[in-house]
Length: 636
Image (cartoon, rainbow, N blue to C red; front, side, top):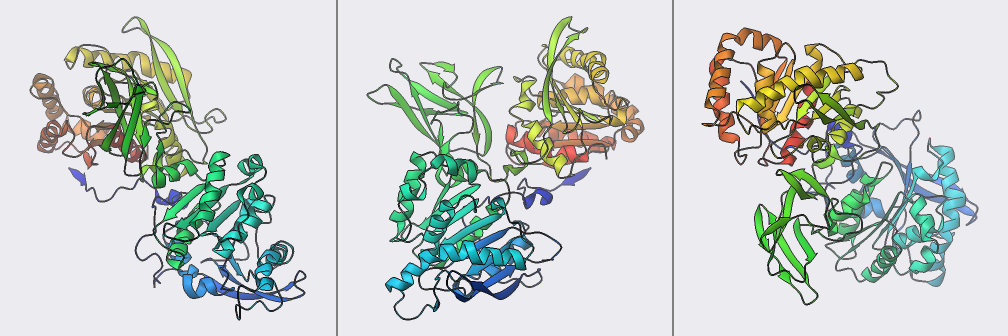
């Protein structure tokens, strides 16, 4: 038996890592420490002619590792504070070290970073009285120097994009105010704007964004941040409050710290990872400040997920005597004078969970939440953000389709429904695709893998990264009655062989050989996979069993009969199966003991298989990860 040890699963493919935004709320230890043995960028000091100031001016330019004139780069203009100059970031913020390390970790899009002197006057040194009126005024004058002189110079000297979508502006303190003033005042020039601990030079919010709708449509990212003990917090907070009021998407990052480079280096570390790639602002805001669950119905504030994953529930039931939230553990809710009941849970595990409200002893759905078929009925569901859930996030990649089809079953003499994922480009192609038939668990139906399982997002991202072959994923209804007896298992086996596969192969371009078919399932679906798959290795060359194993002693006779079959057909099974992949949600999985007994039997009979564990129990976070790990194995 081949075992895969669980080390640290973050759910991000290396090929996708550079396309993801920060999963951390703060920079890790060593992020600003020089590393030997990695590729390093290059620093240039350039001189440009400023018509605005009527003099020669200097800027420092950071070129990324592997820089080449044959490639075109986006640009970040990074500004200093009132007491600094073009060397302030280098002397105190070590941006070249931070960026080099981020590139080594594959977390940045390649970009050129320009560090200018934001004090636009002939004598632009940070000497004497830095608060003198002419020197303060020079920071406002820099807007013209930046737009009319520096940007054209950079575009002439370096191979950079010239459109707004590839230009970012950020700065600290006085430079943060400049960034907000100039960036938001010139939305035709900048799509990415960051203000770090912005100083009193920051315009009032109404002046910064007199047209909030324009900002909504043009900005790729607006980042505002400040240390929680910074005396200038009020300037960042008033801007954030205005943006909230006008519903302008942005990130407001409040960090531990004062008005110093510890905060600003962290800002650069986080902000730079968002640049020039798709941004999910809602996901990041949820991580740093909490927010309504993504599974809420539109416009509903509750359930509200706090940053530590405790959840606040609220429901109006003025005539009820007792109300609870049931998330496996029951939480008593408290009633206020307006008839609203509230409760805050313990920290809830990441991923998807079913839940119910129990009102005077009756389990019901939460009117504020979307509902899902699970536990044998419609139930509420809640999605807890997962730092490692990038592999099932919606991304800017080609997307396949989820199709819903109805077919007539000659086995049950009734109409039945199934869901089908078709890969990107299916309709325009003439390729015959392989097919994965994947089954839900007990108490669920054909909607499970399509909704709770996020099959389409997982497959889209795997295919885009070249980690999985394009394939159809067929999600049928595996409910046929009979509990865990053999009658139900046998009915499903007949259904998939006599009805489902023929329907798919008649209506879709698919490989019709065993080498082009895989069968997998979770829990009850894993039992179906064992029963149907082992007896039909001439039909399926790949089997995936997730959180399952013969239930003992209830299924002793079914298991013993199959083990006898395996003993007599070991060579055939080992030859026919290209992969027999068995996964479990750790020791906390309710099927763990049954699975271990089955694994022992397989070892004893020398049936080739691979075993994988992912902690999380008997839950959808585990099964999503199972599909993510299983799909790349198929059809290779």
